[in-house]
Image (cartoon, rainbow, N blue to C red; front, side):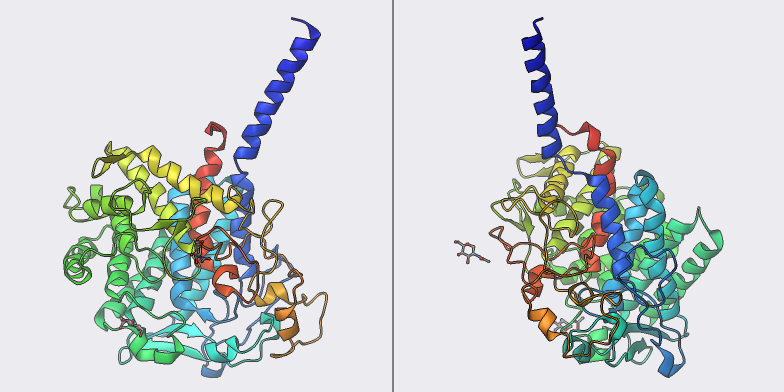
Length: 495
Ligand SMILES: *[C@@H]1O[C@H](CO)[C@@H](O)[C@H](O)[C@H]1NC(C)=O
Ligand SMILES: *[C@@H]1O[C@H](CO)[C@@H](O)[C@H](O)[C@H]1NC(C)=O
């Protein structure tokens, strides 16, 4: 072979390598960042190993006025309220991510565990007074009228609780789910902590079940329209029971799931197969239960398997019964704000269900369309790749990942100068000029996913456009598991 030929062959191989590297993403890097994001949302006294160091201690007196320690937990999004309903869902999803994909996380696993424990330590506090469950900390109107760093916060940190007289089954049962799922995560690591979480999960679930009702009615304008429970609380009760059954295999919880699902089926009329997020748990229940059937007394899986199959057929773009939309660039869309929450949560379910299908040696039939496990994985991967930059704007929707990412996210702490740069207090209205400035945010909230582009694949990158530019914990939490899966399958990807 001539030098010339050998040279051009080498160039060819090099170029092929380039193409492959361009076409696939660094899922491992994205995974580390998706977990780091949770450090930026921490409330309370920050530990010495805090890596996102522009954040400092905040809200150290939460609960002080009523003599209950409610310090800690997570700010939900770009504001400084602790909304425990979506927070608990985020923790459930972090725990589920670790249960399904933790073995693939490598050196990121300890950080994922820290992210869960930051949440569960707080949930233990929020459920420490018998007969009460704290549902939220911080007056949402006062908070939303200000543009303030959490470290400066001087708005009212009112604690809102539900009780036997003023029930809140959705928020309580979601906390029970988070505690039960997390107890499984910690079982091989810290049996004492795991047992504590499990014991609390059972108590909180009993409370949610014994005093049925929605926190909509009990807390009214303090929770609506912020995190109004639109889909009812039956789904959270079933979800909580399913997680408790998964954790301890006690038949009582299985019967609870079966009996209440029948009631729910009558209520929902089959319209919610592709619903899964902080409000509605429907598709999540069906997929979760598909993984439990081996230990249950109805291995045929009725109605869960049939419903999980319908979930797949509601999501796959080629399915005749698809009920979600896709942008021209291929991003999944559902109505409502913060659209990326749907892309991440539904991708998570597709991956988990592909495992069930693989184990059961099954495919899903959507009319004449056959959905194989590998097709489900492919759809999930298309969503992750879009989010990381394979899209018409060639931008990543994860802060700090790739060359082009959102610069003006709707996030108070990220958009105001840090305490290190500007130790002086910035009051409620003092932050307005930073909010309306066209400058990029000074502090990178690394790993944060925003609400994402609009249905035409455009992105304004505007702080005021919170529907698209605000990060939330429940957009990121399911992505942690999804990224762990693709990180471990990185090398087997073809262009
Ligand atoms: C909660 O309030 C919203 C808005 O008013 C309403 O649509 C929803 O049905 C309510 N949910 C429950 C469970 O009452
Ligand atoms: C997307 O584009 C279509 C067609 O040009 C237009 O009618 C629609 O309003 C656009 N939607 C958004 C959210 O920009």
